Figure 1 (cartoon, rainbow, N blue to C red):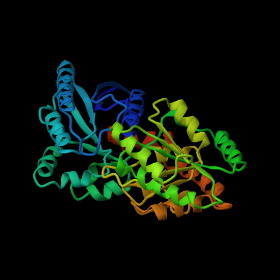
Figure 2 (cartoon, rainbow, N blue to C red):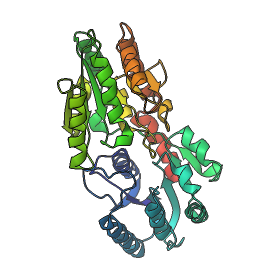
Figure 3 (cartoon, one colour):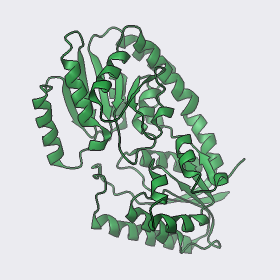
Figure 4 (cartoon, helix red, strand yellow):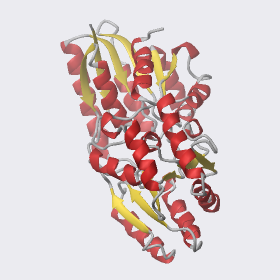
Amino acid sequence: MKSVLFVASFPPPFTGEAVCTRLYYALAGRQSKVDAVNISHGSGVPRKTGSFAWSRFRQIFGSHSEVRKKIAAQPYDILYFVPGATPLGQIKDWLLLLPLSKNRIGEIVAHIHNGNFAKVLRRPLLGMISRLIFRRIDRFILLNQAASRELSPSLPGHKLHVVPNTIDEAMLFTEEAVASRIEERLGRSVWQIYYISNMIREKGYPELAEAAAILARTPTFSFHLHYIGGWPAHASIEEFRQKLQELKLESHVTIHGPIQDRDILRTHLEKADILALPTYYPREAQPMCLLEAANAGVPLVSTRHAGIPEIVEEGYNGFLVQPRDPASLAEAIRKVCSEGAWRTLAENSRRLFLERYSPATNAAAFRKGLYGLD
C-alpha cells in the first residue's frame, strides 16, 4: 500500500479547490495510507485579488515546518500539493520542493487549480525559477484541456494529466430528483436566477445586477435574483446595496451571504432555474458552482473565459457571453427562459454532467494522475 502526503487547503472555506482536495484525500484513502498538512486560511471570507496578509505568510512557513516534521518521521511514496499562483505562492512552492529528498519522497504530484497558471510560469524571473524547480515534479494534474494546451509549451507533455473536477456526495442529485425538479419548475411563472460564488468583483456580480436591471424593464418577464457568496469586506456589500437601490432592484434581489452548510446550498439548487456566472476572474479555471448546478439539471449562463466553454456548450446546456457585457448577459438569460427551451437545456445540463464530471468518471482519471497509471 502506497503512502501519500497531501499538502493543500481543506474546507473551510468551501472553495472549489478545497472541496476537491477533501474529495481526493478520501478517494486516495481507499487504496493508500494518507496523511495531510492543511494550509487553508480557515476563513469563510474571500480575499481580494492580489491581497496579501502577513498572517498568511506566517501560516505558510508554519505549514512547511509541519511538512518537514512529517517527512522526517516517515518517508512517503507520493507528495501531493497545489501550486500557488501569486509571487508569494511561487516562493512557497520553492520552499516546499527544494529541501525534499528522493530518499524521503518517492514522487511529487502537482494539482493545478488555477486557470492563469501558464502566465505564472512566463513571469520573467519567478517563472524561470519555477520552471527549473518544477523539473522535480513527476506529474501535473490539470482541470481541463484548455489548461493542457496553455501549459504544454512550459511543461513536458508526458507529465500532464487532465482530471476534470467533480462534486461532493452531499450535492449529488438523483435522476428522480432532477426529473421532479424540472416538472415542478414548469408550473411556476417567476424565474429564479442564482449567482453562487465569492463576491469578488471580477466574478461578474455587478454586471449580473446590470443585466437584471435590463430584464426588470421587460413587463412580461418575472424573476428573482439570488446572490450566494462571501464578501471580501463590509464596504463591498454596502456599496453593492447602494447600486441595487440605484438600479431599482431591491424587490428583485436577495443577498444571502455565504452559505457553508451543504444541505442548505443543495436546497437552493433545487429551486434554481438558471445559474449565472459572468466571471472574468483572472485565476478562474473550472468553477465548482457550474458543475453543482449542472448536476441538478440547471441551465447555465457564463462567459467565454478559462475552461468554462468545456462546461457550458452554447445552445446545448446554456449560453456563453463575453465578459463585462450586461446587455448580452440579459439576452442570454432571456433565451434560456424562452418557451420550450428551458426544459431541453436543463436535461442537457444534467446529461453533460453525468458524461464528463460524475464522481465515477473523475475517480478513474484522478487515480491515473496521482499514481501514474496508464
